[in-house]
Image (cartoon, rainbow, N blue to C red; front, side, top):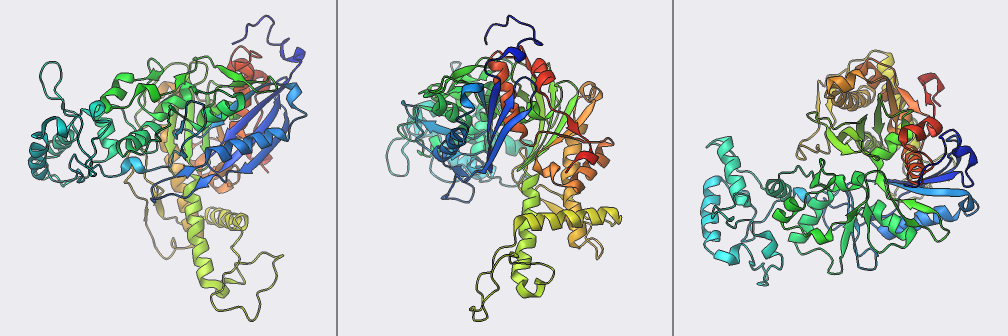
Length: 587
């Protein structure tokens, strides 16, 4: 970080370059914000759909094209060429957990495996190629047989083609330690102990790649976390031969902007990959080695206080990319201390800053830029759950066709009328998403205004991080609750209850210090029914961040600190932090 020689009040007003740019790489959108470091006002903003999705070979895979993502970001910056001479720094916020591989020249040699990729929950084959999911008795017979094969079964075993497994020496998950005691982290041993803990009558269970990695390392590694994805790819021979490093999409964007050939990863992104020691703020290399993950593939880590990874061809400093959770917090709250943030986008999150590490059951402790911490409760649903219900309604509407024509205009108003001679079953124009969501919002508000009974909805349709196999549920269905209005409001109530439950898990001392509850993300901003339901469950009013692209704005705030414009984030927010809006101000 650059040295500071002037007071906070003097420095920003004297800046020769007063613009800071924040880029945000979301799962479904790409955003850019140019902000004035002197007062936080927005100079310009851009948003584009993220159209980088790639076709997948399996239904649990979620892939994106990293080159397309970065090329779109570069094109967005290209539209602001006139601002670049006034730009002091560029910051990057990026979707967390996912990874891609780069070669020795710093170019991507794989797709981006996003945070939604579910291959980590696939059944794990045993050394003979069968799934590890038998009962304890069957596993014991199989394990005894496989271990009698000696080293061929543990450190250089042949795969189904007869070729020796090149990762065998690193695996060694059944070897003896220096005391001669067998390593009890062999997957079969761990599964045996799980059966024993459950009792003799335990049902046969399927052992997954995730369970194996967690047993080998002692770290929880939810599906979608980068090092679990890498472990599956490594064990199935799918890591690109040219891979020199793995990194996040934010790291890769910073590399392309600055022509770096190796990634430099901030702790906020590294922790989201998994196997990260929060105490030392570094990867746990010993744990990685126990799983056979090569340390040489892991990216180098940036400093705790924020690091500039290089400069653009125009000489603009670029900061190391940070997690979108942390960036959204910086871009939404008026101050770090006492601000409880609820963010609903594709997923849903609760976040609260703490200067010291704090433990809370059901919440994740994440590094925060500058050395603090963020307590986070993350749902895999949120906006994606509302989109699932919208897709259900859309399918019903399109299936019924003309029967709903009067109430559901399935064709855009400016579309040509359907031809009389159109063949039966001809495709109809899709119902516009904005009109469908507007209708759903009206239904939910009507149900709340009229005091209708609501069904009890558990919105875990996509599982949870702790239990990927959990399913959603709808209970309390009656003639009064089985209506679009009640069902829509009931689902939103389930999302609100999940977020409120996260708030209830906060440590009492931190919960007592909450002074403001701030909402962010389009899932909250555009849905007054969800805001009302969340306020009711919190028992307190919810404010909205004035800036609509919170993560991109937070990346700009972060860049201003990394470039030395401000000493720390408290100072930056005091200068740049936006006002929060009350319900009456929201449009």
